[in-house]
Length: 247
Image 1: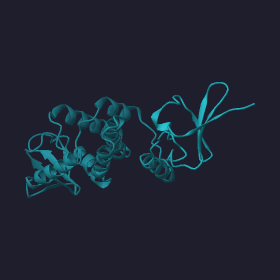
Image 2: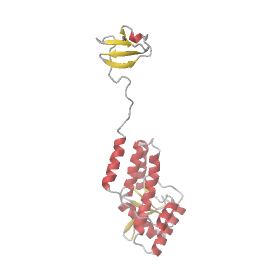
Image 3: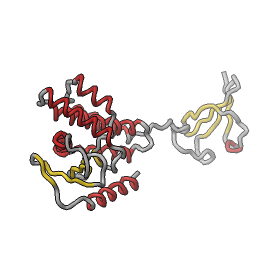
Image 4: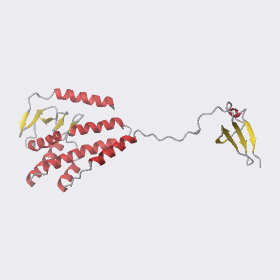
């Protein structure tokens, strides 16, 4: 997973070098027109907004608002963090589901922030621009980019029905994060069969076997009762004194 992560970083770096040198500006937002992508996206930590060379003229204002919000909230770093978790817990299947949910939540949060001050007409125009972007594109973008390939049904439901966002106390989040981290450092092991340590049976000055009248045999080493013996004739027990239980 570390190798895959490194390869993605290299791919992003090489991809950024192919972006046209001259940016375009609209409403103070910098973006690039390029035929390297077929769907609007943000790429790189610095936040390069890429728009396909042809199309998306009608939706451009809303697209730029959406992508600029990704940059303001450093959403690409959130995706990096989730991938870091995948590197550590690559064997834990739910972490891949977590990635899908984080991607969706990022988009839903951006939709909410962009539309919260819009009037009804602007709101529906924005929703239409999202649908247009998600239906026109055909690729999945490249690694570590913010593109629009998320579940349209949930995003539209979120926009149309509304949702009252709630913030979790940072202290609770920090505590939960610490507990999750700590859990990976704890390994549960069974109690060793010989919980009294390792003994030299023949060299001990106080080693003996007691044969009880009920037919059971127990081994004692240096005063420690090590439990029942299933085979008193075992070669490992030769030379150890056998004592008989008396009434």
